[in-house]
Image 1 (cartoon, rainbow, N blue to C red):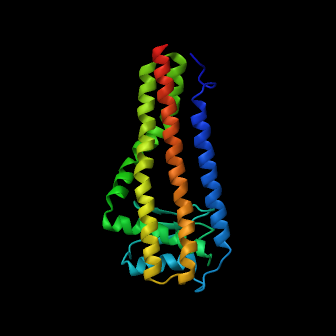
Image 2: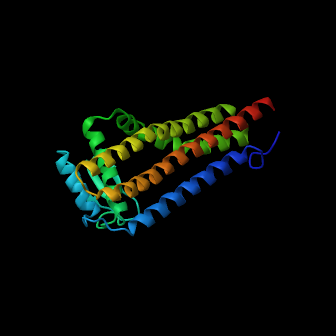
Image 3: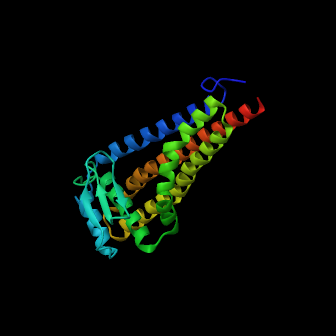
Length: 230
């Protein structure tokens, strides 16, 4: 039997954390690189978002500013697209790419994109899982209550399910963004590759987060099985 905090399975946590750190560095460095390059047409992220929404006949979606760096997101419940400090008034390639990506989510919502609906349905379930999973697992292992550990593992698995559903949602939004950018000529042809690099780097963070969660879930399962054998 080995201790919970000092066991061979901890390498799974380290691998996941290392991958997440690399992905975060990649997106930050890629955004910073292309945030310094102004678009030929001098269009801001806000202007790009409004143009895309208008051309997509999404007149019920509002565009708002939100504080923070890369806190951009689309709120399907309130039909609001929020652009961060780094995107809203910036005329960089990175800003236009990020704004277009968030518009991609608005288009998904309008078209009833199934993975987006599933993700929205899983939000409250995931909040429950992310809040209670670890306490249940820790308490269950400390007290020897394997039933509680099993419930905690199931709750944690719901977090992984949410992240798995998120992957196609994010990839599809990026694909829609690039198609929209090209169709509406928001960027010059030579700027398209840079925009794609920004979106690919952002997508890597979701992949890394999913792998990290899967590795942590595997660790919990291995530890639980070891405790049962003991």
